[in-house]
Image 1 (cartoon, rainbow, N blue to C red):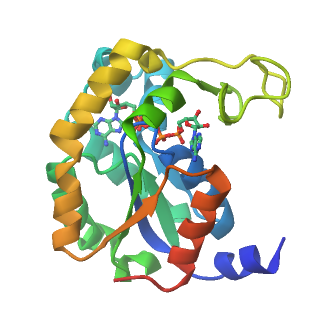
Image 2 (cartoon, rainbow, N blue to C red):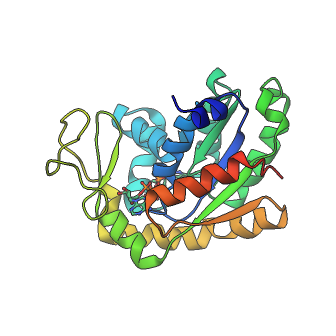
Length: 238
Ligand code: AP5
């Protein structure tokens, strides 16, 4: 383990929120930050997809909504996040990837972080830091339509930017890669519209609270990771 990773793992990173449109690189960067700090990546998209795959009640309610590229109702998502955040591995902090996504979810999160339920977590003393990854529309389209992922280990690839060594096969475990159903071009267009309608207002919400930091996400992955880790390690807590 490098000294930088060891240092990161010894401090409380607190709540980190990754904003940005579909394909901005939230999942890719969340995994890297989570690994550096030794805290969980909490991806609402991944949790919902796991529920769909397991055929739970929540999964049955969410399946068609996700496949249309729309957002799942706030109440379902907030209940799901609330159950995840009180797990002990979130105590030093967590990386929220894909949540909040509406102003109602952000207001719910603010009050949850201040609530009694959460107050025994050491990181609850820290206010969330919000990072928006800004990426050009055409890059988003290419990233989403080129994305592949490993159903076994969850590793994300991209046929244009980060191809596996062997076509359509995971480098780590040899599993055949899959394409997400909602990465179909028509659904992608709906997801981007839904982002503009419902998630974009969060930029103003967090800017008004003085918590927003914007990172140019339209560069190679390592450059984005470097800036993100630097921002977090600078004590850039507001
Ligand atoms: P979710 O899974 O959260 O999807 P999303 O927000 O649309 O984001 P993506 O996962 O598509 O993109 P990303 O920003 O994580 O990019 P990634 O790193 O993967 O949500 C799916 C659905 O679930 C929603 O549509 C909704 O229905 C529901 N849902 C989830 N959360 C919800 C909530 N809070 N409320 C209500 N409903 C909710 O990268 C994408 C591709 O680009 C990859 O191939 C990657 O390799 C590549 N890439 C990444 N970074 C770079 C880079 N710097 N340069 C080149 N390529 C890159």
